[in-house]
Each structure stands twice: as C-alpha cells, then as structure tokens.
Amino acid sequence: MNNTDKVWLITGSSIGLGRALAQAVLERGYYLVATARQPEQLKELSDRYPDRVTTIALDVTNTQSIQQAVEAALNAYNRIDVLVNNAGYGTVGAIEEVNDDDIRRQFDTNLFGAINVTRAILPTLREQRSGHILNISSANGISAFAGVGIYSATKFALEAISEALAQEVKPLGIKVTIIEPGSSRTNFSSRALSTLSHQIDDYAQTSGKIVQRLQERDGKQPNDPAKAAAAMIQVVESDNPPLRLALGEDSVSLITQKLESMKAELEAWKDVSMSTAFEEVKASAE
Image 1: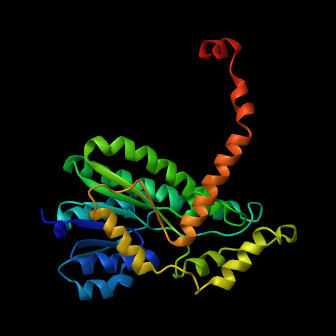
Image 2: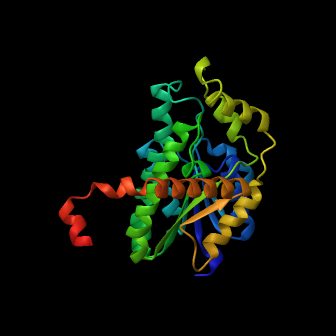
Image 3: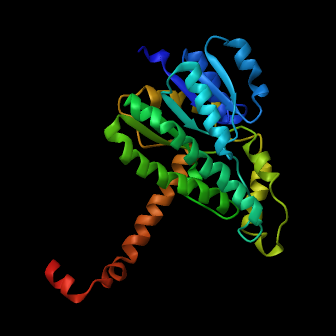
C-alpha cells in the first residue's frame, strides 16, 4: 500500500480543527471519511475531491450512529488506517455553575464519544494489524484551571484512556498519539462561551476571569489550525510517533509549568509521602 492510499476517518470534520485537518489530509492525497452530525456541511469537500472523500453522518453520542458510520466507511474503502477522535466542544463555568445536563453532555461527547468510536473501529485495526489513532485532547488535558474544570475533566480522562490503550494495542501494530493543542483560532471559544448559563458572584475573580479572557481573546488566538493539521500529518507519517504531541507555544508552556509544579510539590512533601509504609517494609527496604 502506498502511503497516500491510506484511509483517514475524522470525527467532527465540519468546523474548526477537524475541518482544517480534513482539508490538509485531502491536499496531501490521502483518502478521507469525513464525518459530522450534519454531513451537508461537508459538501464543499466532496465537490472538490469527489474521488477521495466520503462524507457520512455521525453523532458520536449515539452508538447506533457510530456503528452505521463505521460500516459505511468500510463499505466505501474496506479499511481504516487513521482514526482521529476530534469531535468535541468546551463548557465553561465554575464547577458549581455548570448544571447536570451540561456536564453529562460534555462527557458524552468528548469522552464517551471518543471511546465508543474507537471501540467500533478497533476490530478492523486489529484485523489489519496496523493503524494509528489520534485522540484530540488539549493542553487542559494536562493542566486544569478555574472555569474549565468540566471540559478539562473530559480531556484528563481521555489522556488516561489513551495511555492505557497505547499499551494494549502496541503489540498489534496499532499506534496511539494524544494531541494537545493550545488556543487555536477557531470557533471553539465562542461555542464554549455559549454554554455559560449563569454566573455566581463569588467566582468572579476565578472562573469569571477565565470567561472574560476567553471573550477578549476570541478571534485572536495564537495558533493556526492549518499548521496544527500539518503537524498531525507529520506524526502519522513518522516511523516513531510520540505518545503525546503538544501544539503551540502556549501548550508547551502550560504543560511545562504543570510538570515543574508537580515535581516541586512531590519533592517538598516526599518525606510525608514516603512515611506510610509498615515498619517491617521499611526495614526490609533498608
């Protein structure tokens, strides 16, 4: 198989980073299964690349929709080589401010959607003994802060799932990479801000500041989705792809600060951390 004969399946292909990646994949000469809840939004892609793209309706929160989409993709190309779990959105607000329905909807899309799409495609990848799964996390999948706790929780969980999955499927010839974008110039922030239902005055100086910052920076985000897409293609084309790839100076900085903070705190409390063993265990260790 030539490299460009490979088939990509991208969830959430109609807007934002997913759309930029879909465009880049087709420009690179790959085949693409572009999915979205409203596939008519993908018409421009199918009109421009009629021989290389198949557009399919997919709601990642609906298991029947997932199964039908995977079957349609396999009927079209008889294989899937790269799965990109991109479908998702952000919810903003302090933990107390976000209602139950919004929390469940966030997890259903960002976490369970990615899990269920992956599980539906894994039998094909196992049979092929090849494939690459890219799970779109976030810098906030490593470092959470006030105002995005629910969103970050979905990405923290996706990071854990991806770490374990990478170990499970490596012997089967399947690769996993976690993509951790920083702030990209898409409609992500404006969509996230639209989820804010109410604000509590006591959180004005914490989560409220984050909401304000998102509003001020909307449309001015530092990272180019097209360049992020190119980086993801480079990962897939690499013989030795990373488990994690941060995208953007802001992502690298945020993750670096988190790792340094964790290490410093671990060292500061190391004696207390090491004090919990039974005395006979300590004695045998000495």
